[in-house]
Length: 202
Image (spheres, rainbow, N blue to C red):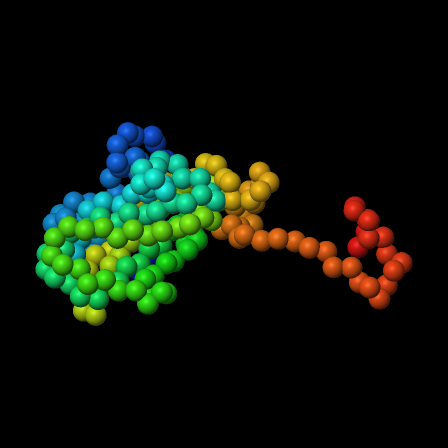
């Protein structure tokens, strides 16, 4: 998921509704630090402790809605002052296809992180995901290498959509993400013998 990592073979589990802050996951996906966990890697100078989704009011969400604002909150602890930290986030759908890969490098952003606990908030102004189940993989790295990499940091489900003006969602076999778009018909002024009325043949 991170700079040099691809998809894992781990299936996405069904997301249930659980009260509290961690309700975006069916289970706690970020393993506790300092445990023998083969899914997690990095040198441990920074470690993620929690990853969850929240809405524009800062409230944790269980089922985010396509087309609405959502934020991914990455809570972490760093064990020393760390300059020039970069974050990476990848979202996989239920077919284990990466639908987006977002890096702070894309906007030239780095963080100088002091020792202690903190959060990085990844802002998505209009969630472009189809209805279905997803997982998020996260990583952080600096010039020395990977700090922490968690291939299944958060699991969530999109069950409704307000992305388009009409109640439309493309089938998953034809699309991995939603694209805001419009259509327009431009008549050919050189030929007037075609029916240009609504519903007419082009």
